[in-house]
Image (cartoon, rainbow, N blue to C red; front, side, top):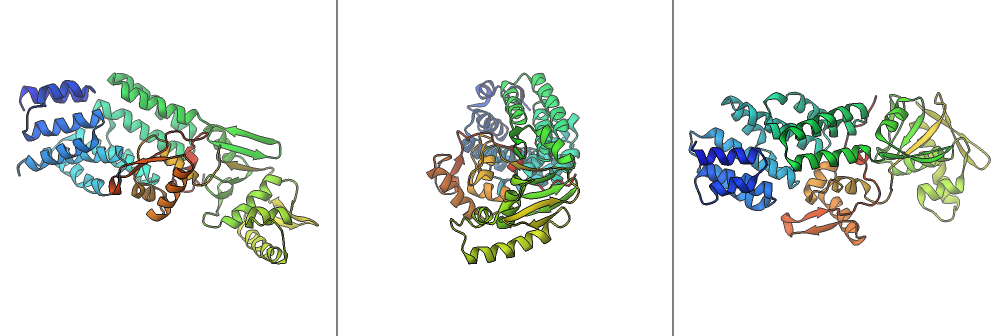
Length: 406
């Protein structure tokens, strides 16, 4: 490798893309094209960066598998930033294996960190945690260690582990300071603000208030019966009853929990569950059916007692009842929670992360756009969605994650 290529690579590692371009901007050999692509990515021109990296990969010969694999890894990182979470990421595993086989431990570790980051974005926390654990953090390039610890922060936040999240954030901050790269320090600052922001709103018999992540963790660990509107579950300790996909039952459970220790009138339950302004006999009949279903569903945690005017929630063992709600509620809150990271997402990436159809996401972002909460740019497959001003506090509890069972 010649001196200009070496100097450009060092400049990129130090976060100085302009210095790198001064050395290789007029060269068209594959190593120079690859470095120019990485430089353009650091400057924010992702489309140009992607084209340069692909051109470089095609230019490397049959005996330069390691160089081609590095281009694949760089393109995968651009895809992550572009929130293109499907096709460009499919070759990342093969590239990582190639790098490991050829002894490039640093780039192989970087590829592993990128895969963990992708899995985190789409809510596959177990796989993300396993992938991250398999990465040798000491082998990572210095600039990549900040990202490694930020992935650990994200996993801990979604698992509602405040202490682990704070410890990983401290490691990320230390790694960013050691690089001296201001962009990495800014990324850690954003993660710190997200960790410090209210994670949920508590609704209980003694009033309403915002909770931090540590307070949410303490509430879940207590003996309270918690109706969690962020994850659409009802739980006491490690016993969890999922109600995702059963909106009527969850609406009834939430109404009963918000009123505890008082009962709730049939008219109010009908209004909350069926959005009916007036309770006619058909509504009352349907309410009896749904209350029966809810009673069977919540049997491990609580009973439902009929009263003269309605129904009363009776926890079996819990001493108190609480509702956890997002800090600010509204339609399509989970889409806003993903867009709150400030990146531009495609509809397909949002659908992959949320586990719904692209058409469902398209309807959601169009509704949010009409309400002025998101904006888009580009056309067709290049169209991306952003939320420049997310109302209230976006919460990590709305992001994709498996049910936490203690």
